[in-house]
Length: 137
Image (cartoon, rainbow, N blue to C red; front, side, top):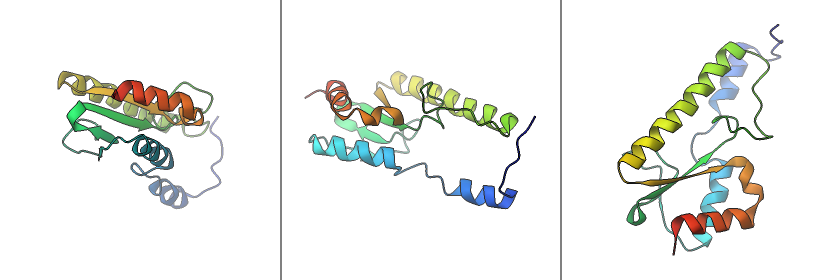
């Protein structure tokens, strides 16, 4: 049984339009961390599949920073909405499928990828060592 949405369709549309796909808070945390580690990168290179968040051209490596909800990470933070299930399920599944296609295409082009999930930002030391291991010295 569908639940009641307290917002009108116009209000819901306006609220959803404010959701960013670049320069999000999780992305900014990762960017500051990586920059503080001494690595330099390009942002959102449109020529690469998936428009990666951080691109390390000389290393042929990219980092994606994914929100647990939008990319369906199976963690405690992810929860399928209880309302409009017929809308959300295919939309989020399409995001996940697109992520997989982009990662495969990047690998085919010789790029290595790292996905950092929003829920992993809480473990700063672990995240820092993971990034360092991925990017190398």
